[in-house]
Length: 324
Ligand code: ADP
Ligand code: MG
Image 1 (tube, rainbow, N blue to C red):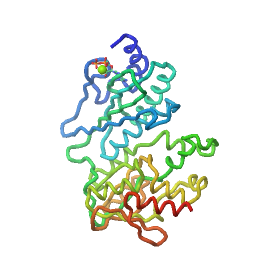
Image 2 (image 1 turned 60 degrees about the horizontal axis):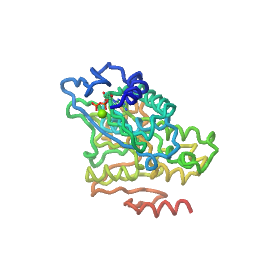
Image 3 (image 1 turned 180 degrees about the horizontal axis):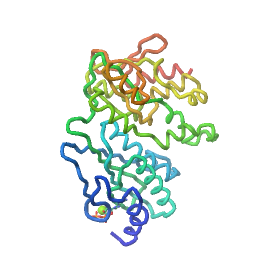
């Protein structure tokens, strides 16, 4: 590796507060591999995500926000497994070494990493079209990782908070609307998603199946239903919708964002009824949005008193009706 690249890594990443050894990280950036401690009786949980310029984010995306968002989204996968974050690697492809861009990127990354107590343990830096790959490492007590499979008939279907905020911010993210002050709270949800790490850990030994909502409540419930071989019934009237999204887009559009919009990074999970009270008493903003029914891998939506089966494009049709 050329000296310039070592200098780049040293300046922007190795010196970041989040890259300092400590907690589980014994040996960090600078050797051939990182070394982490895994306590006896724990299992390692791993997930990776790649974001490519022009595909996953616009060409002019703010590097600070981009880094924050990339780490937040990737950590959400650990949350969905009930894992505690340990560390992450960063594989970065850059068209050129732009110091201002890298400083802002490293700042966002460091702030998100400190917020979620996860260490930058290593990575790779190459020249190429801008691309960001993050691999996150976490741990769970042996056998307690949460899964998509396991929903039981009679369980409640729950979500970890308000939905549709990030999707409601898209017109501003894409520059179609420019009155950004009006949508600031929604834009924050888009650029700084909050992976529900604490909720995920609280669901260990309680939830029967869990997923993080990245593609929209209906689509991700489809994954839960499929993995568990059950039907999930969602009551649209119980889906928590953001008041600002309602004010800016109208109630039906805000509901459509909550049901179909992506990028929420809240957890959706099925829960035996007896576990609900305890979770709420612990302060988690858990909302019941439906229930688990016997049957095949399917999602049903109750809306305006009618039950509608949700299958791929089927809901598109319904959504158009709502906008008319
Ligand atoms: P190797 O030749 O063994 O692959 P590199 O020269 O690519 O090692 O990297 C040197 C050190 O810097 C390694 O510890 C690696 O993990 C770390 N590193 C490289 N790029 C990054 C990055 N973008 N972020 C964090 N650590 C990095
Ligand atoms: Mg390398």
